[in-house]
Length: 266
Image (cartoon, rainbow, N blue to C red; front, side, top):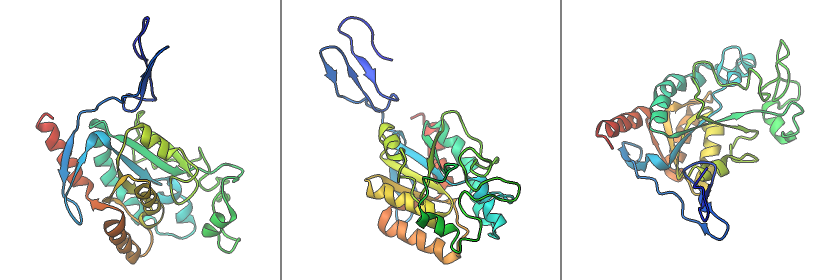
């Protein structure tokens, strides 16, 4: 895409948010200027003003193997009811964010069938005795746990996806290791990242922490996140996010601020 004709410059970039123009004898390194769309939302430990034009949401591991009663965690005896708690809040929030033209990024486990992307140390986390059903192992019926493109790795049916959504497969607790997530965020021109999904104290926290260490502003959406871990893990996660890595807020408060902005015509 871009201008045509002699001496014209052609736009180079994956999207309209982050790119520059080039021609036979000149390059224009100026990025597109996007109008600011600022909102202020109640948060903890303080209110936060953010720019919707430079914000994305990452939703982590809302997958059948983690959240469905027929999935892997339920099969090994984990109560998945807590993992399903974010579904209702995300169903309400995500359409509002898409309407505001915010990038929705799903970061999910998606193992290679040969498991060559999984280290023994990672396999040990989920199969500590070597005799259980861990990552990539078959469940009754033959489905392999969190294998890419499988039912177990798919996002739960209750969470509708849009064609504009972005999908990233991960193979670690953090969605930044050995994935294109950082490059995607930078090409989108994102500086603030919202987080939801499961488990809050594991994959959500690890990804949020890495995002913060990479220089992104990070916010956990409390009612859009949950964990199957004990309650003290949830409390420690909230404490650490607020103390060291960013802020927390409610998705409902964020949605209300966006609606108010739209009603004001800005």
